[in-house]
Image (cartoon, rainbow, N blue to C red; front, side, top):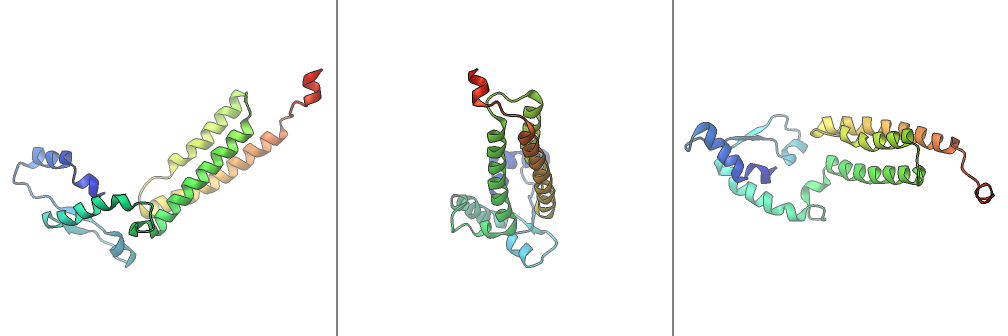
Length: 160
């Protein structure tokens, strides 16, 4: 977020709308304050710019044990969702085989596209992640059941 707020394009957009002397105020709710139960966003003006620069430079810490924001519940959920998605796609690819029928391929693409549902911030993302997980489980079970029902060509029949 800090990276986006500090982009030159963002400053230029503000200048175009309000002129050179326009004051910018960002309305944010920092994760630490959110974790402490703060419900409303705070106003941050030009004075917060150095803190945003520090946050932007801290992006190199993402995914490391030093990533303070990575311990938030939503970040842990996002990482788990990425692993679950990778596992689901691996399962689908394993079940498709070399020449799948078009209907199976369409269903596989639809299952892989379910991840697009998981968008938004905070609670909205958590709700959508829960809905995604239940829909993914349901559709993967149906996909696997349909795969098991398809008769496989036996090696002896192919050689005759």
